[in-house]
Image 1 (cartoon, rainbow, N blue to C red):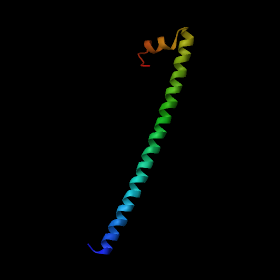
Image 2 (cartoon, one colour; image 1 turned 120 degrees about the horizontal axis):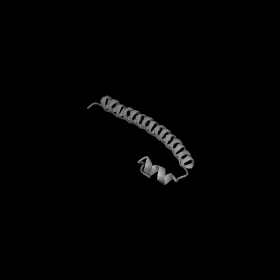
Image 3 (cartoon, helix red, strand yellow; image 1 turned 180 degrees about the vertical axis):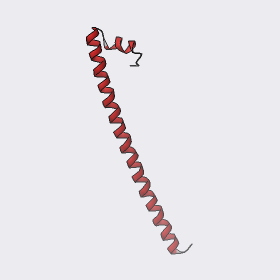
Image 4 (tube, rainbow, N blue to C red; image 1 turned 45 degrees about the vertical axis):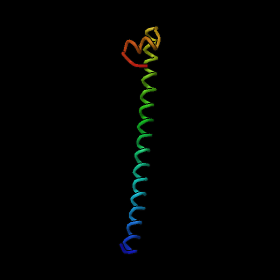
Length: 71
């Protein structure tokens, strides 16, 4: 392989690595965003379940069992 071809090949590999890094960073950002959304929904659900327990005069554990939720 000529020097020019080797240089071009090396540059292409470097660009590919940069692109892979950008894609991985985007995936990580999306995963973090989705995890935050999940946690917010889970927190809101626990608040509702807590209110149900208070209204029924029972414990969170009893409501979890009643709704077939895992702890």
